[in-house]
Length: 150
Image (cartoon, rainbow, N blue to C red):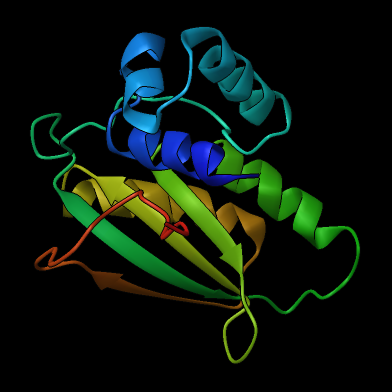
């Protein structure tokens, strides 16, 4: 990737609705060259998807929860079951397999505490050893932008 690709990615991270003509002008290349580069970045999986980022308060999902999970199962089959469970829960946004004391860290959004309890009841179907949750009281920084080379 060169400076034009990095420029395209930087701009698209800020505003994925930019027209190809605008992207091309800002990075200093022709529209056709810009279009080919965007297509290649998508084909190569560098650009995974272009989405609208919603304000979770405005869609009544104001409560963010981070859920720490420990399992007693460390075999080949359990992660498949766990994946099926977490993929079936709409409020689960992110799931990471972790090193250290935790096995998994989950980020979820829910309407309220009863909403969290419903999510928890679905989550424990995965036969977990320990679940610990922390609720976000204030979001101090939130971004989807990766720090790209300039």
